[in-house]
Amino acid sequence: MEWPTLILAIAIYAAWGALTFFHHLIPLVLLVPAAAWTIAWQGSLQHEIIHGHPTKWRAVNRALGFVPLSLWIPFARYRTMHLCHHRDERLTDPLDDPESYYWIEADWAKLSPLARGLVEAQTCLAGRLVIGPAWSITRFLWSEARAIRAGDRLLLSIWARHLLGCAVVIAWLWSVCGISPLAYLATFVYPGTALLLIRSFAEHKAEGAVSKRTAIVEGSPVLALLFLNNNLHAAHHAHPTLPWYRLPEWYREHRAALLGANGGLLYEGYKDVFRRFFVAPHDRPAHPLGRAPDATDGGAPA
Image (cartoon, rainbow, N blue to C red; front, top):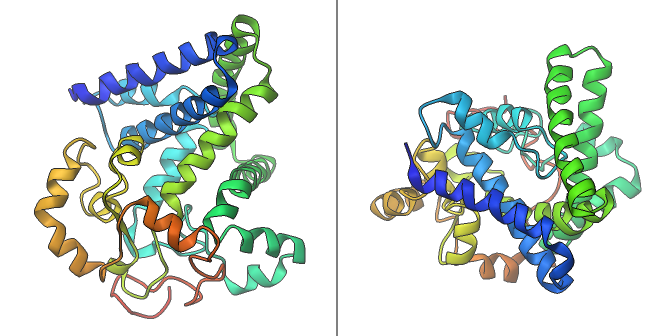
């Protein structure tokens, strides 16, 4: 039983309940940052739960993660895609890594000029924050709808349960708190999703060697708390089942080995990430190697 994570879960859901119920008493300039933090914090909590925390009972863990505060992604789908992402030998691959932002050349060539412009705008952090939530949500929902129309019954079942959860959330927002769904999307979901995109923006980079594809961000105590130390991303991929509150100590013990393995892919805080990439591209959209090489660290593309 991991009490720090259980206490965190209680704090997140209590904060969300308070922010929604008392939203009319909170100035918008304070409400939006607090709402964004809460949605992003729950996303970090869900990530922690995916890796087997905080209890030994899977049903309890999944119940803690199921609550659809962000509305747009079912927890079961996030779990499946994220565990696929943890096949490190396929990291950054445009087809095999569900969390990759890279494209294969053939798909890149098929995009319209407008779509290419929207994708290229997201290679810098400013574009990712402004356009990224709308792009990611719309693209994900379109892909899910196509799969369901094609006859994916398991996906249909996942979405049926998710939509029931969304109905409960919306009933609370609208009937109890007096918040319309559109207002909730604008003040909670969109800024919260943008906040999470800060973490994912520079945590992976296309490289031939598997060990060089995952970055580390140090020296950001506030955002480290928000992201539950997932800013130490190379450490998380090396030891994905370690609880968030034990990860910093493990990282300090293995820092030299991790930096040696990832080629020194280190950022000195998220200020460093903003300084480097706020208006400059992190990488080109098309995968520089076409596909991610296999686990032989430099082998032929899969």
